Image (cartoon, rainbow, N blue to C red):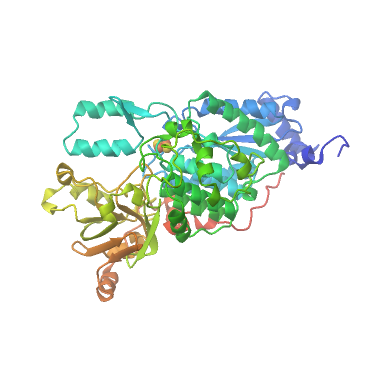
Length: 579
Ligand code: FES
């Protein structure tokens, strides 16, 4: 090593040096192929190679600005003395992927892990935002454990219709109920379609995307304040360049994801999730992300923290505003100042500073959008965990999104065997459902659906909507979009497709839900349940070839994060041999 080279900036310590530095035939091949792409030796020699993992595609509505952002990242990487290379990875669109993007979360995570491992990369910029892209990119990068920074897509601008502010998802569900009830004409409905999604960026309510990007920031993987910036602001473009500059330092300093993703960091993630009134999906994703770092999170941790930290982000679906207002009110850093007492402030972030240091100077500019803790949006916690003979391994409910009278409810059950059955029969008036009925959906879990889709906000029968009913108690092994609302008991585990008690529920049974007591009880005797269990037969797995076969064999249940068993934290794969 030359005397003039800082020990921290010794090019021979770069991972990519194994590909490019040796004076041998194989490295000659690598260098000559870079030259084939038009790069000179001085473009890449002795520089950290930064992979920009871009989830852009024409099928991802939330990432339409990512081609520009990738160029802005490259500008930052060049400025800081790195060598940027853009690498497309699976573009997961929440809107278009079926049966659900969740089915493919682990596939993207696997692709990211192997992409980071097989290429000569010293650092990575993870470009994501649309729902499952966030946990997938983080899970893959955590397993590969190569220095990484997360570049959040940012929320889209607020929607508007006839002077009324619209929020992604939330207002679609709301107006669809009005349309079904006969209160909204076709013209109005079509105008809504034009006005609800008006710019690049992810959903701008507190759905999974806003929740998970905020979590990515609080666990230390994003530049401070970056996740609240609306996608189309010029600040967002400047932030992208900053990510490019910063990742070069992280690559030299060998700051890897697992150095940041500690137990304390995940504690901070749960605290933040609760203060935001975040999506119930965050539970599954956080368990999976923590699992990649060798940390076990339990449902009870979420429940306990939700009792200590109330929802203070006044954002739809729990509140009134949308993410653009949140940014103008001070954004995530301002919110974190309100819950400072609950946070582990020593946790490190990609900024090179602690979380506490990142909060210096953060200010709340509108305390109706970001409330103080003594004036929360709701007195109820963000997420409650229910247990009982119907969900021995747990289920979750977001009480802030439900009508309060349904949080302690006993009712007769109407069972739907799968989503097709629900679609065919739910609006049939002959069924005679009332507002007090409990709607149960089976075969909507990780294996049964498959992919544990966001079907959990089960539709209310049109004839009840016309009577003015807007919420009912609904129970399933599905998930629910973070933009949805209602008294929906979700993630019932074990799921019905593998013989969980949900599979044994029959029309006419009674179920009792008591959220305050965390109780989810099927009023059927153990003897009768044993008879039903003996008669129960599993359905064939829906997807039986290729990825579907791998998925059905390896996916875990919701309380374990729905990750693949073989991707859980364990022995690291060796660095690739270079022959
Ligand atoms: Fe992409 Fe909602 S559709 S975040």
